[in-house]
Image 1: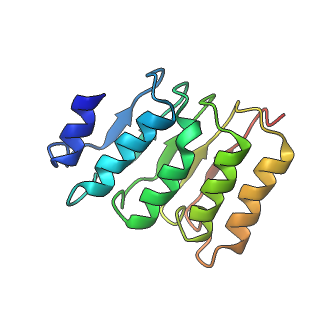
Image 2: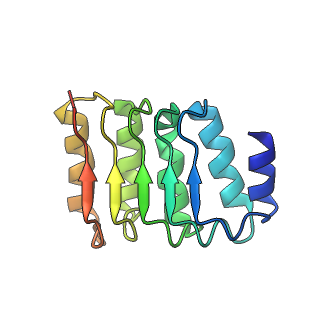
Length: 148
């Protein structure tokens, strides 16, 4: 992970279009490091279109994804897949803050299935989309299957 973080921070992966870390043991700290390197880099990951963090425990650091989307360092990110990645109710609340600020403006596919949070937590995310001035105008796919 440190090598990936370093490469992103230095701008050595600026042509990356797909980042698939499925089953990689990421967790909150890993998300903070990875997203921090995107924020600290000059251009971020300007061509990244797909991000797959399924089965990584990255859901614990969902707040960092919401932050980086607001900074414009992932301008082309359109597909986010976080299936069974340990999203917590607190993480959804924190992510909702970013969503209200416009984090989902360019996202067309948001897959958050099998995180077993219950309807209330997902309701907070939906409220954030509704309350956002920009909303999620390109969103074509939203999956929160198995929300209980």
